[in-house]
Structure formats: structure tokens, C-alpha cells
Image 1: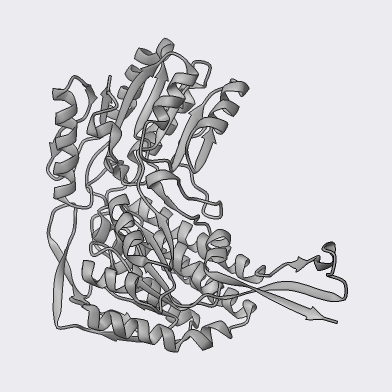
Image 2 (image 1 turned 90 degrees about the vertical axis):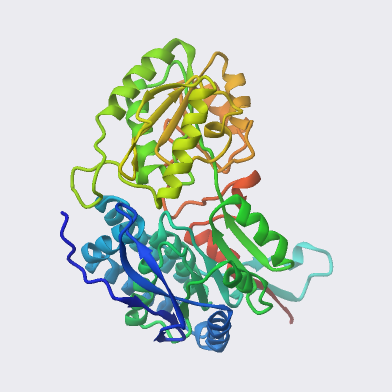
Length: 480
């Protein structure tokens, strides 16, 4: 599948308050696979950001007054439209991300599912009854809570799953009756523009969603704006820290980076673990916050595991993301490829064994396997965000848990074991937002609570959980 079926616009405008508009300046968008400019995008400034926030503020009342059934109806209709346009949208996303075609189709399906979960959460939005007479003096009173919209949501998304990340922010915002200003990553704005078109067609009120581009100055404008009470951000830990510093008293929801670990215990299903590690390490070319990165294998199976994993990796096909038999393609930019390949070279020069890949073919880094990696190497202690798995041996289970925790990150961890005591030891002692037993850290269901600890973030995503963060609990008390 190398022929484009969808027509790219010459210039993609931004979307503010129900209107599409161009700006004074544009910037080129490159196809990551070959570096060719495929379109241009309107470049917003703080002027357009101010217009977007003003539009959202004007829409607060109409959004808040949408009944729950109407919010759910809009979200479900948008989900239907995503599926109806899946093929054309998937091709558009290949051009902005460089991800393989079947991965972008999967992302669209997950995005639709996320919007449906947000619709379900909208219908179930409710407060609590407070048994006030449980306290002496509470007789003759009735007390309960209701949940109300919190206001304008500032959503800033990363490039790796541009549509899905937007769905995880915009969906719950709509479910809560909030308008949203969405700023996608500069490399991947096209899918967010299409999402805006879809919500417009689904009946979302004007001002309910604006999509703007822009540089750091635009992002910081949103974060600092006094009338944007919530910032929901997905991206690097460094940027997340900066957002926390300048947001001051507003609520920040941060889904940040990780160097996710996987433990392969001595009594686990090695065949299954190897297959899953390949999926988790090289899906989306390793550009996932929960990609399989650090793998710790019991010494009894260490060399066997490496040999069999290397054979699987060497069978993966690299190539054009539009080709149906491609398994791994380019990273988001050649600069990213150069960074990751540089880290691989550093590791090898410091004593790591290169067992598969490691070479750059055109603009693509081959799927790479490194063994005997130490914790001070960048490929281990930092987030790779590329198609690289690093493997180290361990002897005792308690020791390997310490190795997993020797990280500034803690998003999700995978543990393959048939030892129930080891499973519960991992659950209790690993410092991570999620523990997947007999599964890779990369597993995520879009309605589950998802978020990390340490430098991996603050708060939880998943429509039900984001909705709680995007609404205000108001106490109501009657004396009767």
C-alpha cells in the first residue's frame, strides 16, 4: 500500500471557536520515512492561543448545560465517525507519524473505544449521599454531593499516539461538560484537526473544542492562563516538570516518560514472554511510554532467552510504513534516530553486547537487542523511545525488584512468573503505577486507570478517572 488515497491540503488551518483560519506564518510537515515535505501547517502564536481560550470561556455555559445524555450522544457519534473514516484517517496519520499503517488503524479503533468509554462515564456521572447523621448533631439534615464542570481544559499531547492521546483528554473533558483547547505536538497536528472536524459534525457546540499549533511560548501561555484551571499533558518528564513549576495552583495531570522494566522469572513461560517482548519492544518502533525497554532474565535462562529473542528480532522486516508486511519503520524524525543509535553505540563501547540490529538503514534504525547492559548506561537509565530492548541477568527475585526500582521512572512494569509468592512480592514492592503479571508493561486497556509515580507523572488517565479530575465535587446540605 504505497499510494496515497487521501488528499493532503496545501496548508492546514487551525480551528478556533468553530472556525478554520490561517495564520501569518506556516511551517512544513515532513513525512518521517523519507523526510519529504508533505504539507504545511498554520503556526499559531499567543494571539491565536488567547482567541482559543476566550472562545472556550464563552462556551463554558453552553457546555455545562449539555445534559449527560447529550454529551454521551456526541461522544458516541464521534466514535462512529472515526470508524467510518478509519482507512483515510490511518493513511493521514502515517504521513504525520511515520508509523506503520496497521498500527495507525489500531490507534483509531482504540480512540473510538476511548470516546465510547467517555460516553459511558458521562452517563454515570454522579455524586454521593453523605450519611450526615452518623455524626452527633447531624440529625434533621440531608447532605449530598454533585459533580460540576471544572472549566476550560488545556490539553497538550505528544507525537507518538496523536489521536489516542487527544481522545483521552478531549473525551473526558466533554463528558464533564468542559470546553477544551487542544495543542497537539508540532510534528503530528493533522489527526487532531480531523478530530475537530469529526466533533463539529457530531454536534459539539462551537467553542467546545479548539485546536491550535504553536511553539513553547504557546504551550506556556495555556499553562499560565488564569482561566484554564486544568492542564492535561502527555510528553517528556522534563517538560512535565516545567509545567508543574509554572502552573502554580491549578490542577495538572501529567502522563510522562518511563524506561519500563520486564522481569522474566525462572519458572515463567519463556516462549510467551519472548513473543510479548517483541510486540512490546518494537510496536510503534518503540515510541511508547510503556515500551519494553529493560528486561531482566533469570540467569538459568539468560543465554537461551537472548538467543531466541535475537532470532525473533532478526525476522522483523523494516521498511515503508505503507507496506503491509512492514513490522518496524522510522522514528518521528531522523534526529530521533540519530540520538537512539548514538546511545546504542555508547553502550557497545562501554561493554554491552549487540545481538541484533543496531544499524541505520536509510532513516530507519534496525530493531536492536543489547545484552549485559549496566544500569548506568543511557539505554537503561534513560527513556530510549526507540526500537531497542536491553537485557540483563539476575539471580534472586528480591534483587531484581531492587534493579527495577533503581530508576527515576515508574509507569508500568511487567512480571512473568508462575511463582505466586514472587508475583505478590513484586506487586507490593515495585514502585510503579501499574504491575502486569505474566504480561509486558506495554499492555494498556483504555478504560483502566493509567498513570505513574516518580518522574512518570501525576494523576490517572482512563475516561472514568480523568472525568473525576475534570469535574468539581460540590457539597449540598439541607437542614429540614
